[in-house]
Length: 135
Length: 271
Image (cartoon, rainbow over all chains, first blue to last red; front, side, top):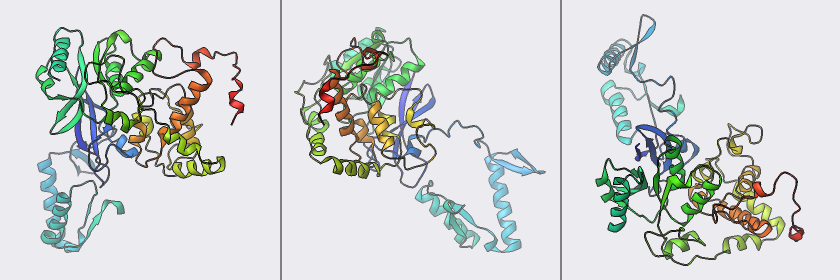
């Protein structure tokens, strides 16, 4: 019998509210707002209160998938990233850098967002940098 | 504090309790934790902080998984009132819950406007007198009736329907919540329909609300919910002589009012 709370940040939007994930015997069963967090001070929005629900949701992607022969097949992270890098370079060569673009997210950290735009602007050479809200 | 930790350690080691639900300090942050005899050293990091988490809510989560184990729990005055009500509503068995009572400081009692800042049995802290402060209710009562509706509609219009008040409430343990019933409340959209959303909650708090104030603390829009529920609690006391959280063996109004109808004393005619 094990119950503990784990401090983390809600994954839903850029506000970054402090949440406590309630973990019962190794499984996440609920959420409590972190009372002393400077951002939310013990309050949450409806998404925050249900931030744990997607963890065990059906149909959640748990492994990288690559489309081979018209079918999505499981792959390793290395395989998937190699494939992405290879195709990016091929497409840039064939159709120019502006044929590629990226969508980043408020759920990512500032550092992750910086890295993504840096790769697209400096390495690929395009300013097609956009945001998930436009999807 | 050292004595308290030692007593809890003994209770765990002797098997008197299978676990103790308290607060642990992690990197300066006090968070809820279930101490067990498997890791007695964790008790060194136990704290009694000035901020409050809904301990009885968490107790119910644990009891649902382990209904046969005796569990100790740190309780303040408000948590203890919740325990009384949970026993009455048959959510916990009193013989399987060992409350370790913590008395609140004068500052906490004043911050919470608490009229009973201590549990039935105090194992830590010094009891202070309750605070009798109706100023939040008086502020509303001073307004003439037509202004009052405008005031409340104004407050309710701030609601973002986060369900925080319901989620954090120690007394909201219903498996099916009216606030999520499609036939009564519009689901799938925000903001909620006002004033019905908040009035449903206020009326459901009759005979339930233990006046802990966690709802107001959880509301991101700073709606003065607690004064609504305190008013309802007062009416219950005035009309039916019933105060929540006092006596485990007292029948709650839904039981003693019965199914044959009940004549409300004439006091209701005075507005």
